[in-house]
Image 1 (cartoon, each protein chain N blue to C red):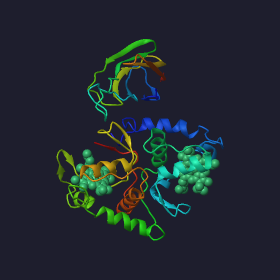
Image 2: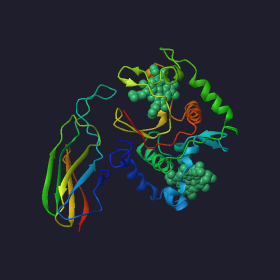
Image 3: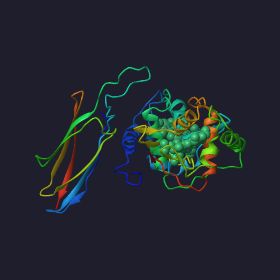
Image 4: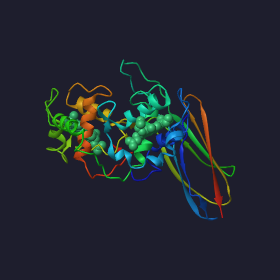
Length: 216
Length: 106
């Protein structure tokens, strides 16, 4: 399903993104296309996200980068997290990096944030007292109930999950895993979620971007 | 209603058969679920999909609640002349939607 774009339901969002891309918005009355040209002009960039943002002095996700363009360059209200337009635009940018190997600069200012993400990944949490690594490293390839435990790579987001019956972001996936161990899920735009995403991107260095992936 | 993804070959040889693939954007809410407050979520599914080719009906499909969101249909037809392939689908709210693609037969 993922390998055939005519079957991959995420392409319904790509279709939506194509029209959003050229829709003018905000006080600047500009569209993404007015400044960036075609989405293909942003080819390859998703392989470098989450990326350093000097204004925030922190890493930001691709979705947050797009919302920054909304607020600072378009003068429009940001899209709510997990909203269809935000997922759609993130997917179309991600799609133009499909096949590019993940490549995060691990030496610069991102370093402490990667380390923070790694610590979180290895910290036990929740009533079940399990860390991400307990499942995605120690038990990868085994089963949890009916589900195969994957290695926990985040190279296909936003992705279509059959269980969700729609497209979803990495933070949504993360909340599902945290609820699974009965921990308190991280709220939208939590810096810790970005740190985990960043660590996972370095852990998956060299794996290719698969956006938009399809998962059970 | 968001547009569907329709996939047919650009050009088809007269007399040969070809695949028509259509992915419809729809929640296909079964009517069996409840929201976070325990309230029943009303059923909202596509009930029927209908397709004509050069004015002739080539398929009519009834859909049921056990079908997942964003239904994907594949069927084949034989090419006899160039013309529009028109899709119509109707959901529980009675909304009928359309989309058309043109088939070129040589």
